[in-house]
Amino acid sequence: MALYSEKVMDHFMNPRNLGVLENASGVGEVGNAKCGDIMKIYLQIEDEIIKDVKFETFGCGSAIASSSMATEMIKGKSIHEAMKVTNAAVAEALDGLPAVKMHCSVLAEEAIKRALQDYFEKNNIPYNEEDFPDFDHDHDHDVPNED
Ligand code: FES
Figure (tube, rainbow, N blue to C red):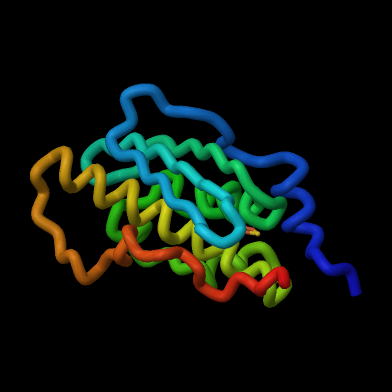
């Protein structure tokens, strides 16, 4: 069986929503300390709807595919629906990721949440901190040790 699904390859080769949104309502940047990969998601939000979304990912193919898929999953959706997008849902939408690559999809979930948190903070919208990961912690998740 191929290591990567056709969907992963498709989103890696032809990423959707790649780029930057000037004047984004919220921007979320997260990284994984172990692999060094970085993901940035830009949201344009109007009336609690994600009107547009773009991403920049400096990372592996699975991270690029995960961010591409994640942006497709939240475009046109409400911020409440976007809050519910999990890394497992992103991986499932890609028809799966190899176990050692699951952490790449975690970046997508976290980047969306971080961008939403940024939006809430910029607009003085109260939010429950418990709904958000602690973005300052070391993002080592389950990255396999290289040595
Ligand atoms: Fe770290 Fe994919 S995001 S290897």
